[in-house]
Length: 306
Image (cartoon, rainbow, N blue to C red; front, side, top):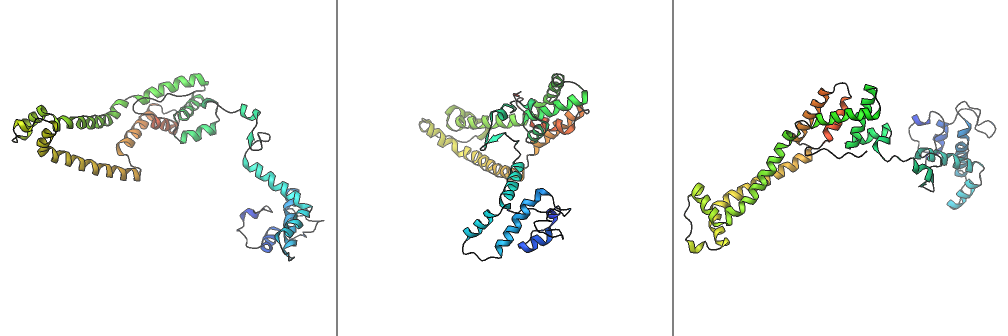
């Protein structure tokens, strides 16, 4: 633990020994008990830690046989308790808890009663923090509060303006989501269609006549699904095998894109939608509008909590 003494100590580099510490942080005036507070650099708040340093220096010149003897000498010093109180008060102030808000590390009833339960009751700083994490309710609150300032209206009126902004942001959302629906539909259709194309006799015969024109085994060798699959595998194996290898390569490529943080189409449509929203409402903060637009989902809007 390092106790900072003097107004200029925070600008100094760390020191390797106590002698250099006192030389660089102590005023040129005498450091005796009678005149240690006379320096313009010293205030009563620093007297306790300074005495603590003097006590440590005095003990460092004496050879003790154990650490317990050093601790006993320090505890017997009248300035020991003052320094302890000073450090404890500094630690509590750094913790950020209001006096009386916690007892034994646990919140009090009065402190808990003031806990915000909705995003609307949070402070501006809390809302900005959650908005940077792309939480939809926080992004909404940023826009609502910006509307209140720009339009000079109350919360309820600003919420009505936000609803219009949200509707504008949803325009063209189905078209932006179409490539994702298309990819999902093609994958599901191809996956389920592969079963009859391989194992269903009538479907295999139709596909063979339309696209393959290969000679099938006699009917007595096509009596079971497995026999049909063995016959159709002659032309289905290259197709399914190549598609499987292609998808394997695409999956590997996608994993590398994820490692690089690249989602080309997804990021493009988000940026495009946010630019359109900013262009539609230029009077409001562009960053707030962009954050809300980017956190909105393609399928359906979030169910906002209060």
